[in-house]
Image (cartoon, rainbow, N blue to C red; front, side, top):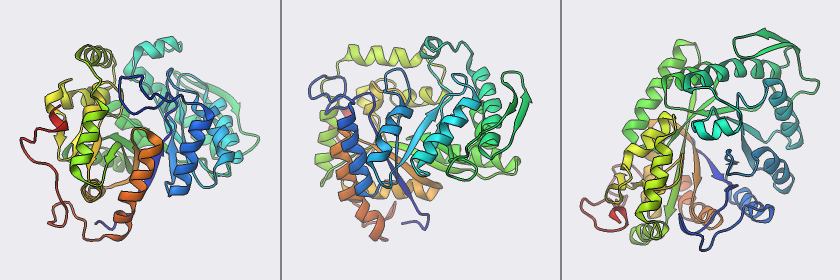
Length: 379
């Protein structure tokens, strides 16, 4: 593999979970009992952290993380702040408090937002570039507060006078900042203020371009940014079983459901969402967009819409391929999240830890990608 050490996080489905997309059959509510099962499983299986999503369809990530932190031992929680929806001083106090009560197990995901309809429902009527301008000013005040400074600032969007924290965060300088965004405005924010830049699961060549663009932008500001990727995983003992599971995940989706979802995504002003939709164009016959990278999830799910599909050796090889590009953090998920967390840990983790002969192009890896394969990828 690569010498780059990888870090693996799991996902807490605070909007619900299930065995099939677009179907109520087997649906699981995101109650505390179920979320606790997933968080404790991730904690015990060796995942270093868990992402809690944000949005009007989700349970609040801050409340959920505060409830789950005492129920876990090592698991870190990647929780969203939403510039424009709360002040940087309030966000800094919330951050410091949760960081202390979790004993330094907090990470922050900076979410600018990409759905104008949802934003307006939250009272945010700014356009795309204005939201990133707010984010830049927000992060300037927020970061300085977490570093222990007293801040007085009068900006175009955010002004504070004599702002400070009475109680500091557990982590010196505050938790690490994660952030994703594919637009020029987003990359500028990442280069200036973010610790780890996240991309959704695009083909390796596209990811490499993003990494290069962000790295150059950060270097111009005298900074270095590290990189992570958000992917679903469908892994089984054989490639045939994995692709059958992918097919089963979307077998209840009808064309009308897909069309409605794609129309909703098209109304968003997120460049990243546009890139996700362009990978498959809403079509069932072009879902394998790169070897073992399947876009079926993105037919109806906003945001991260691609999954690594295959046997353990192949999935490990694809992870190594992204590692070789400079990705050091993988935020993974799968349906249902409890069972798939076990599959990834039991089938893939041992290969990542102890199989140096797993390579991207090596003969030791059984590549299940075959042109013209008429299985789940074209279903």
